[in-house]
Image (cartoon, rainbow, N blue to C red; front, top):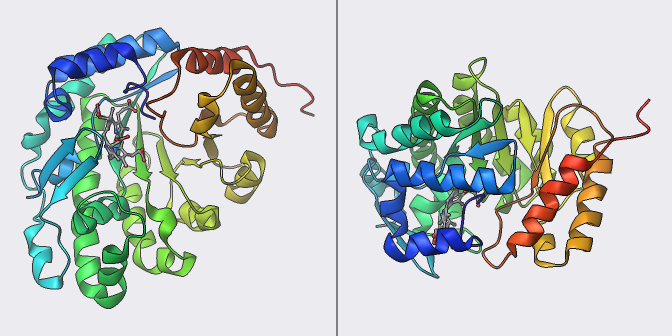
Length: 323
Ligand code: CP3
């Protein structure tokens, strides 16, 4: 996550010439930066260089990425009367640049490196549409969800339909795996997840089932884990707020698990990175089906050296003691 990003001097250099949105809409640059990053890091999978908010533009929202402030989406949709402003994703061709980035990246990757396509899960997209950006408490989103469930469900259904089509198009363009990111869903109570989110995430995941493996990633509230599992996904992506061993036990060993080193560990020293990475690996007990990953994106202040130490540690790890 944030495999190619501001922690890399090459990326920062590129960004001095090109703003982020233009970069996302220039498939040659997207594939170049990702192919370069994958080669530099020596990882087993690449994620398409893009952003989960891009889908909102052809649905009628204005997008802005300004340095230091995070993304903004506008004008925010806060009432039932405004829900119609987010329209159906009619013209998938307006996201052709993403499909081209998928094709070019796939073509440039070694055959044994998987390419992960991705999209935001309906809740995380709805949170951006309603809040207008990243938020601390998601009060506007919760107000609509709890105060006007029929408007909420209409919005979520529209996002779920768009997301499924978008992901299927990425698969058609060559993505080997897809991941849905429910980055902000951890703000919810379990019962609210069950009632207001689960059916919509499930609708997306059901449309992908049997086509390519799907990773269902979320953060923030490990108590949601059994419900996230219920919503679906061949692999469940978890953050560091729960031990990987407990997370996998909860998810069940019939599913794969992805995670879950705290990205802040990469701000420390190579020795701490090694120790903490080994601790996560040991919790997987050598079972097949563990995708080692961070629990969330690489932080911009991360020393590249620590990322390289992490990859080396995971590559060299030999599981022992599994009966
Ligand atoms: O390298 C990769 O991992 C692939 C590309 C990728 C980006 N965004 C690029 C990006 C992926 C998979 C995403 C997903 C994404 N985007 C998520 C889900 C993952 C997560 O972190 O929870 C979310 C919530 C977004 C929305 C978004 N886009 C945010 C919150 C930000 C600001 C981040 C920050 O630290 O300021 C972005 C911008 C963004 N997306 C950058 C990159 C490389 C930084 C852009 C820049 O300033 O150059």
